[in-house]
Length: 71
Image 1 (cartoon, rainbow, N blue to C red):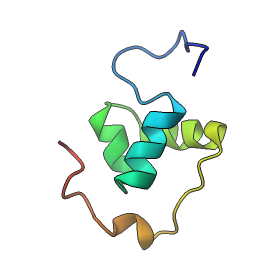
Image 2: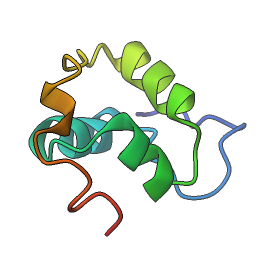
Image 3: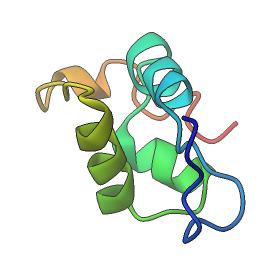
Image 4: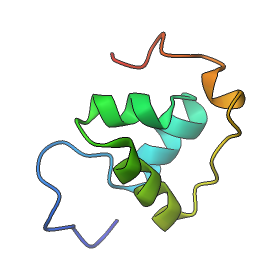
């Protein structure tokens, strides 16, 4: 993302590539991504909406569960 968000402080997945990798490729849950970056899950959901990342259905999100979530 070319424009930095001045309100985001600290480590963040606030770029489309990182969110897509974590959520789609690594199949992490929004909650796991939020914990990894010390953010609220609603923040992760909002960022995903901004980037047009389609969310999985409830059961699909737990396919890998939290086994690798907090690395």
